Every structure is written in structure tokens, then in C-alpha cells.
Length: 599
Image 1 (cartoon, rainbow, N blue to C red):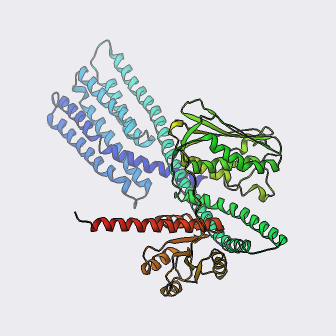
Image 2: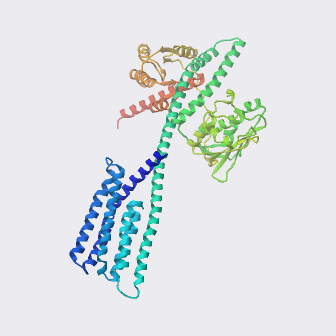
Image 3: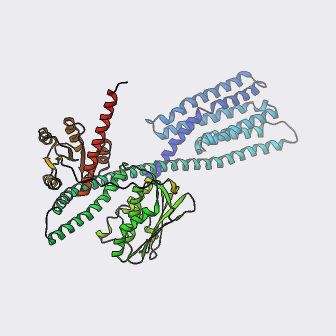
């Protein structure tokens, strides 16, 4: 404890030297003017040489203080105690020089002596601030000046009947010195406390920065772990998904059909949980665009009600929708749907009996519609209501029942709500269910665009597909699935092998894994193959969900499919890539034709 106090006192002393150094270079200017005024008064009643000689000594002391005090804080090679001792000596010299001015007191008139006293006591009062009230530095200046001034009033006075007033004035000057001593003590205490508080604040800021750095490192480590674990898990899942889709297209007996169906359902369940991790990575990578548009809530929510109705009925729950037909909002319908889907899915998972109500009504502000998802489930204790939005945290699922998901739904909801700039509120109590409320910007129903019927494209046309993947099971499974769709499939384990196989038979589309062996990656593979076949449609397939990987694919302008890729996702993505390539080709042709036309 004593060592800690020693360190604290050293810090206060060093800060005191800095203060005295700054004041030592500011104070000489007003003090020189005061000293000049006193010298002029003294020169008018006594020897000018003596008066101006005193003034020269004052200037010399002030110059020494200006020079030495300003350098004391930077003399780190000298002990702190010695530097503080020098400050004390300079303050004492200053006090003795100014007390010497009272030699002229016997020759001054009462008015001049009063002016002299006011100037000297004013310097003493100002020294409280310039020395921060340090006990020694301040008092070695105060008492020589104060005592000399009091003695001058007590000894050098005119004879008369009011001589006692001079003695009283001298006593009052000493009493004033005592008051300044108490004030200086309080000033120094406040100064020392402020120095220690600033140091504690600096230390706290350093600890906070260190804690923030550790938290950021832990978050980065978590992201890397999730990305690596996701990639390693998605590889075999992707292979199983492809084999399952290929097997489903073969003739099977009833028992085999049931097995394949159940296997594919299990894979879809596992894939949906892995996709939750992917959603987190996409949102953290800031690669999710927001496309706001005006749409009516009633048909939009009715579709969600129909989709979730079977899941609610399996638990004997009522899924109710109460939405005015004129409810219309402006937001991103795809991202908002993911929010509402997660809230409804969460409500069904944690409700044993009763109902889930999706309700829409006007908020307090007429410019918003309030969309609520209310359940009669177990409810959430108040102390856990903030934690349910954390990743992987679940209320009442200590056994980690996989049917209740991974605990990422509400974490994704909070990220999406922030992305959409919405307000999400929660009202819940144990045994009384929960209600999640969203305020969505209202819009004019007349601005809703009529629905365009979706066109379902045919299956894949006859085409040649180049598949580059360093995992042989994935290549075999991809070959089985694409062959079932009538495609000719070229398989390669590296970019070089893919180029060689493509030279004699040009592919119509490239499917490549993001991670390849030998330091290669899917983006460089696409560039290499396109150098031989410009404009070749290409798709990336990856199990890597790291935010930086997502950004790389986004910046390269390539569609990234995440393992396990379902048959529907793969075929739709291939159709979209072919359509985009044909559209770009027609645009280039039209531009060339326009350039060739005569002016």
C-alpha cells in the first residue's frame, strides 16, 4: 500500500511541476508591471538607485524562474525530489525579494503604503493558484511577504492617537495569511484528487481498450471457428444432399422411397440449421442489400399463415391472423419476411397449448403499422429478456433439443431489424406468453404494384457442365445429379485439369468449389477458365461462411451457393446464370450493331 501511495504522490508532484512550469512562464508579465509600479513609488521618496536596483533583482529572479521552472518537468534524468526542491528555492527567492520592497515603507505615505500592501497581498493570493496550494512551495513565498508587511505596519507609523490601528492592520495581515494557508490546503487537496482521478480514468480507458481488443479478438476467433466448422460440416452434407437428390430420381420400391424421403427431410432440417449460421455471417459481412418497396400486409401475412399452419396444427395450436385489408407498408419484403418467419417459428416452438396470433394495427403514430406476433407460451423472465437475443442462447432448453433450433433465430432478427431500421419491442412474463412488436413505416395502398405471375422455367436444357472440386465424393455426386437432368458433365479436381478437359469440348457453364487445393480458389479458377472461354457462366459453391469469403465473392460479381445445395437451388441458380449470360450477350450484340450503323 505504501509503495502504491508513493507512486501516486510522485504522479501528483510531477503534475505540480508541470503546472508551476506553465505558470512560471505566464506570471512574470503581470508581476513585472506590479514590481515596476512599486519601484516608481519608492524612487519618488528614496534613492532611485536603490529602488531600481531592487527592480533589477526582481527581474533577475523572474527570469530565472521563467528559465528553470519551464524545464523542470522535462528533466527526467534528475530525481523528482530534487526538481521539487529547486521549485521551492525559487519560490523562496521570489518571496524574499518582494518582502525586501518593504525597506521603502518608512518613506512612503499612508496611501502609498496601502497601495504597496494591496499589491503584495494580491501576489500572495494569486500564488494559491500558481502553486496549486502546495504546502511548501506556497508558504515559502507567503510568509516572508506577509510577515514583512505586518511588521512594516506595526513599526513604521506616524505618531498620533490612532497608532493602535496600525497594529490591528498588521494583525489582520497575519490573519489573512492564515486564511490563505487554509485555502491553499484545500486547493492542493482538490488538485491532487483531480490528478489521481485523471490517472484512474486513463487506466480505466486502457483497460476498456484492452477489454475491447480482447472481445474483438474473441469475436474474430468465434467467426473463424464457425466458418471452419461450417465448411467442414457442409462438405459431407453437400455430398449427401446431391446423392439423395440423385437417388430420388431413380425407380425405387415403396420402402426405399420412404427411406429416401426421410433421409432428405433430415438433411433439409440440418441444412436449415446450418443456414442460420450462414445468415449470421452474411449480416456481419454487410453483404445483404436492402430493397424497399410498397406492399400490402394482408395477403403477404396470409401466405405465411398458410405455410406455418401445418406446424401449428401438429402441436394442436391455433395460428390466427388479424390484419386490416388496407394495411400497407414500405420495407424490404424478403428481409421483413425472414424477421416475421423467425418470430412465428419461435412462437410455435415455445408454445405448448393455446394460440399464436399475428396482429396488425395502427401504432400511436399514424405513419406506422404495428405488426405483433403474440403467443400463449411459457413466457420469458425479465432478467432473461435481453439475453434471448444473444447467439445460441435459449430459454428452457438446457438439454439442447435440436427441434428448437440452434438459438440463432432472435439473433438474426435483431440484425435484420437494425438493417431495416425498424424498432422491435418485447413484452413477456412467465406463464403469460410473449409478444414481439414491430413498427413498420406505413404506405399508400394505391402504390402497391400488381403481382407478376412467376414463370417456372423448364428443366435444364442439354448442356455441358464443367465441375471443379477437389473432393472426389462431391464430383461423383454432382455427376450423378446433373446426369439425371440430361447434362454432359466434365469433372476436374483442379483448375489446370479443368482447362485441359475443356480444350476439346467447350463447357456451357462452370461449377467450382470456392476452396481448392494447392493455394487455388474458385474465383481464380473462374478467371482462368474465362480467359479461355470469355463470358462463360459460372457459379461458386462453398461451405465457407466467413464474412471475408462472402465479401470476396460479392465483389467478384459471382453467385455463391452454400453447401449443402439442394437440387432446386442448384437448378434455379444454373438457369439464372444461363439467362444472365444470354442477356449480356444480346446487350453486347446490340451495342456492336449500333456502333456499326451509319451516322
